[in-house]
Length: 574
Image (cartoon, rainbow, N blue to C red):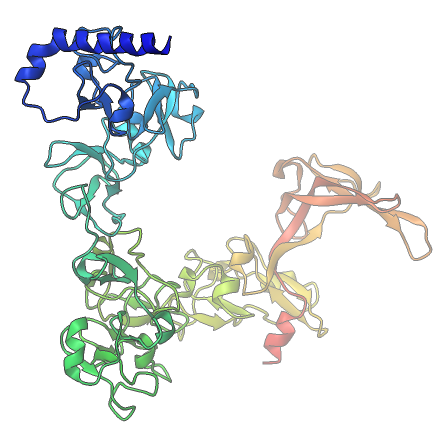
């Protein structure tokens, strides 16, 4: 049987040569001869002509045979090859360089792992997305089409995935192509390879190709984070002030590798050099903002280093308070000198200290502007938050709130905090509330003041208010009285007399306090001891049971005023 099997194969091969003899004889192909796929490269198959061919699907066929041949009489070359899912038919995915039936069905992207997959609408299966600068056919195949990542055409005519850019910057090795807009929004452009080709993108040729916090490693052509100190470099290397690691310098000439107009620090006696900078290249001027620190501050500025000129400045950069701020607390940078792009000026604090107005890893810093040598101006108290934050205890912010309520004293400028003055805490006779009505003078926002006793035993006027923002810092705006009631003193208007407190007295006897409960101001009297009464929330509690039971009710209250139990005594005592 073995001899018969060999003979049958041999006869089949001869028949193939007879049928295809003319084609073989006339072919100029120099392909490898074969009788099975095993005699070809992994990327090839053995054709019916006895020659190894690249695995390409001809004319929509699936079996590697010639056009119109069903492959039934030839070798089974298997499924077509692939490198990624999009190389396969709509209902198949790529596994081990072979297209196979997809198993993960879907109707929408959210049926897939949306971070790495998309739903092929034609095949109804989940497929892996292409990465930046990988081939694509449609936008939906790219990393994040929802964020405007598009499938774009390169000069070679092939489509590759881009990445949305505009306000957002591009990764190292890519440029934001602003010649074509794709939609609207802050990132309407696409990142392209800086070589205009996705075949072997070279990341950088110089430091200018890298983000501002990186330098170009000319050996590998990759952008690397700037070094901060010698510990970031290999043994025996120095971290030069340009952010490059390199050999220690012995002269200024050794520094030309890292840039122009650099000097070599040979001694701590040199200007701008210290014990830690010997053997390091640096500009003949400041590099770090800490080298320009003003102590004490000048004109409320800590100073900063202008890294374009390497000069120490006494003004300020950005007004973005809390990120990069050269002004002292309570002051902000006014852009009197105009604004300038972050690409042209350093927008960070010193390396290693954190804080950048623009993060070059994620943003296009040419689109972010900062103050160019502005001056530090005081931030008005009404722009620094509520009065308790902007001002100190017992102080008021001049001009805020802006409506009548606390007219500023003549000596106080708008936007300045000042210690509250009379009529705040003006002296008054006990219960002589009429002595505290300063509404005609613009105080109290329409609410009369009330005369109350302070912890020092004296009586002072407490001005009317709407909320605590109308009061001096740390004071509270609250009602003075709750309208009480009993059988002899029923509630006025349409309020209902009911208990509002239940508890034990000193003799452990149950006692109740009754008050006028309401649903709106209309239920309360229009005149209560000379004040307008308001229906306001209150916690109504029963402390005779365990645990105590409380619920929110509405009761008639009067005399809403700024209150503090000991503040007037403090002001009176200086």
